[in-house]
Length: 247
Length: 247
DNA sequence: GCAGATCACTTGTCCGAACAAGTCGATGAC
DNA sequence: GTCATCGACTTGTTCGGACAAGTGATCTGC
Image 1 (tube, rainbow over the protein chains, first blue to last red):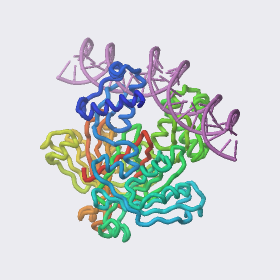
Image 2 (image 1 turned 180 degrees about the vertical axis):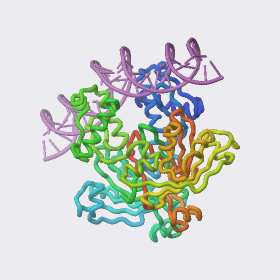
Image 3 (image 1 turned 120 degrees about the vertical axis):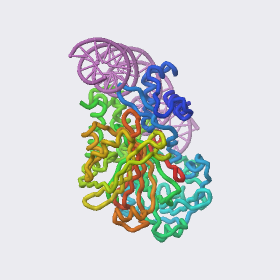
Image 4 (image 1 turned 90 degrees about the horizontal axis):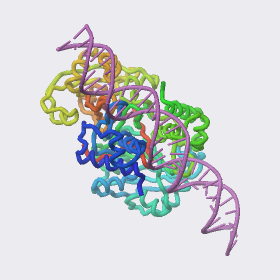
């Protein structure tokens, strides 16, 4: 089912996690791997490129590849969906809609969703919990063509992404995230049951379909100490970028 | 000098930034690009793979590639070095060492730097400023073999990374970052000239040499509202991972 | 008019080959 | 003993080809 290079990448990931290739040690050469898995060198290179992008191994021309670490990021689905991530981590996720209404798009909405100002959008405010405690306040703005499907969702929806997939086959494919820290406002504090001014980790996100059509953008605020984000980078591949000011 | 596929990637980035390929529009086919740049299809694929990893374009089997956005992450150097990033953004960076001393490694140091507990490490506390205002508090722990070079640095060093490269040719190659939000403690507040309890964006980082040898780890705390981080992801490639609790 | 089948086109996967460029240990000169 | 040179080895780059798999517009039959 999966491509051969993905199978090999998985095998290598597992071997690293099991300590077969210890952290700080070296990976076999491309030639040896291509012999072991009976594939061409190009296929092996595709597999190790994936691990390099994940930050699991380091690579330099002329020298053998080095194992930098294990246990890293999971699937896109787990990042996109709070519920799916929680499940994979062995926690239980909850969700509750506080309010939800349609309004005309302002300039910010229009720019982010690539629509015209004034076009109708759906704004939703949700509180998400982890093992019973509220940890995340989610302010979403959906494009109009998504609004009907979102309004059909129950108020206590566990996984929005899963529900939308089951309902209309919607796939969330791409996302951009901007991360910073803010102090909890009055509303934030009340809904998350914390003190006003407490630090919150804010993720502003934009999501599109596989065809690049914007679906929604959102402002997620995590209670400090409950959730953190990890990213690996290297010369030649760094997904994370620093930005100044608000943006 | 640069590899052909990197030249092509740069040309495509520029074309996107200039609006030649508008956001939401489509990229030429691989066949057309390979003809235009007189390279094989494989080389074109390497170039567009880079843009895909950056989140600039979306890609699905069977359909043309879609332009998702422009202006994204810069080089690894800009992420690793506060000064180089500031310079590229048109700001001026400052740096000042508050204190600096050697001490035996505790268990946390030993684990992160892959050394034995008790081995000597160098701890440094720096305040970094942007255009005159203090925005970042940096707590670094360097491995012993780096300590001499770091101690030779002037107290008012603008770019630590640059200075270490000039001095001993040290290259920072790989990094792992864990991001969360914390409240400013008493020391944080005093040195950054903010109120105690103000939200700070915390980045805990581990850096290694090209050969995978740990150089240092650090705890960076950014004043809220001054700096944010951006990351793009997609199905099949997501560098960012969510983590629960402290870790 | 509409739903399904068809088909040209595009991207994904994989192969095998060749050469360039860099690393690292061994060898040898000083 | 130290340092420069050398050479085997490894990864990086690029080519050209072939086929598989998915998309989207067109065409066809009802």
